[in-house]
Length: 242
Length: 229
Image (cartoon, rainbow over all chains, first blue to last red; front, side, top):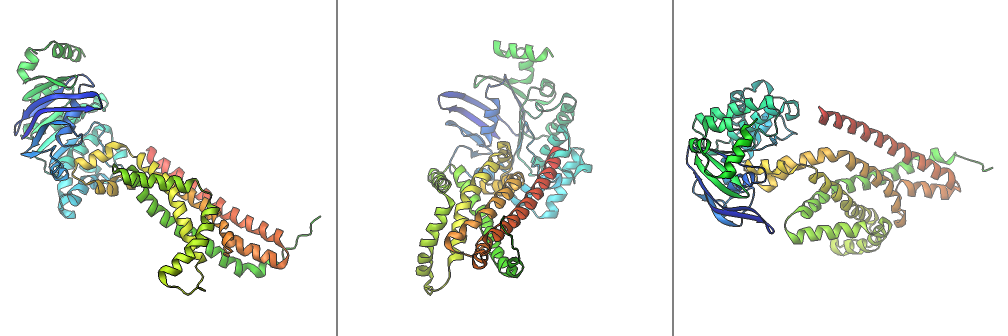
């Protein structure tokens, strides 16, 4: 489904990603972790072309992301993305947040988009909030709406960029629960997150990044059992301490 | 002690009202054109296409570095010739109002463009990323997501600029156009009551602008309350 092949990226002389290679198969859940500044968010943003990269190739469902001839908007319409800071549109009601891209990008009619949006809103447990504005919801609720907004586009896969790291601790689980459910339904997912409990529960593989490189790319059991690199061991030790 | 005599004002009111209409017409056309053209300039200035960005930056810097009076005077001297040539107008057609409107509109666009540029930049970058991630084109992201938020933040500034613009319309006196100020001046000159007429005109400008800024302030309070919840 997603194939990343020797991707490198630099800002001027600063190397952000170095020869990153990995694959995500249909139905797989991949967790990407690593210390801050390791390039994990940049890597995931390269997958839908939000960040350009200078060398290597990324293909999503057979479409090359870096090819200048690729219609990126068309590709992105079917690759869901959830951001650290939710990025709901604050000037629109929750319903409009869920329907605008369905109508303007996919060309669905109003009723169809509304039905779909409300069904997904119900699924993330927020049906009662349809008429509210994002500013009236808690962070956890906003992030659940953001997930519903992405799902409304019928994505072929979902990218999560630290979806819980801007949340208060008591709200993290409500978001993770939605993500776990999604994983169990067979959604192809690539998640940048530090939530190791989530990784243990649903990940097929864990990718560990440091200094712009993929240091480990292993099955969940191998990664948590005996990480091969010293850097991953240190990272796990630090993260599991609390 | 100067002997005030206000008696020439009541009879002059219809004439002054005609002048006020000219002032308002110029203000309104310049605000509308300024916002539309200013938005285009702001988007060019922020665009990754270098020549567009340079053109917009040049335009804005040029107009902001020239006094409005001079712009108006040039337009008063040049535009009538151009308009007459372009539309084959009778040499006696009065195009002073049109020239003034064009001058103001082009001049004010430079200021509006700066306000709008700041407004666009005040919208977090993540909003564009989110819109793009949903498959929206750049134009859709701007139109549906960025500009509505930018304008909501900018309304107080845009209105304040409109108030300044309304005051600046008095400068059209250089083209002998009878706007409100020009009309007041003419009446005062005719009746030898210049001081009274100009005091009266000043009072009217003050009342209109003060009332308008109070309205802007009230709107801004409402806006802040809305954002804060």
